[in-house]
Amino acid sequence: SQQGEEDPQALSIQEGENATMNCSYKTSINNLQWYRQNSGRGLVHLILIRSNEREKHSGRLRVTLDTSKKSSSLLITASRAADTASYFCATDRGADGLTFGKGTHLIIQP
Amino acid sequence: EAGVVQSPRYKIIEKKQPVAFWCNPISGHNTLYWYLQNLGQGPELLIRYENEEAVDDSQLPKDRFSAERLKGVDSTLKIQPAELGDSAVYLCASSPGMTSGGYDTQYFGPGTRLTVL
Image (tube, rainbow over all chains, first blue to last red):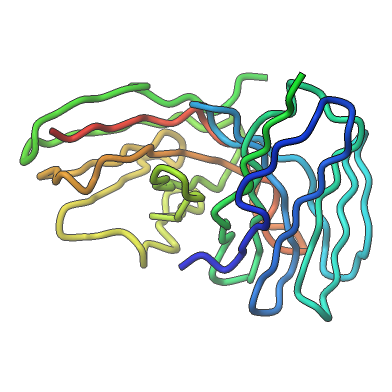
């Protein structure tokens, strides 16, 4: 079963704009990870945020985690055409391993 | 550093035929995962190995799927016989192992796209 649920399912923005994707989950977690998948390729790890962290940055990426609301957001600033991909959140619930959501499909229009 | 290698990249077979997928993880990674990804969905775990031991295979349909990781390095996932519903992308991933904070970053291979006719 897929615990994480990304929102929106699809997002289309202009190049240079910021993109925000959200992830909601149901049970307590050890950490939450975000991955990117370009069409026809494997997933690439973007960022990991632990349950005791609230915000993390990596380049143009900013991830927040609100454990009280069981939600996380991924912000991509100053988007580029190369950011077009599907983005997945994955929750680590310990013994159950990583559980991936269905993903947000992001399209950056030039 | 070489990434996770999978072969073949694409496979087309007729139903009831057997098929096998091969994965070579990143050198030194003790943990190996096999995932199934259907179109428009996220990956779903089939089996996880810690070295050569399968520690989580609860989602593996054992009547037709089997996996092995001899010597704790390469792994093979087999389906016999394949059914139409098995058409999907099969992803292999590896990670150094567990950290004090839970599961570590996973590194994915490009996947094998299986089409069952």
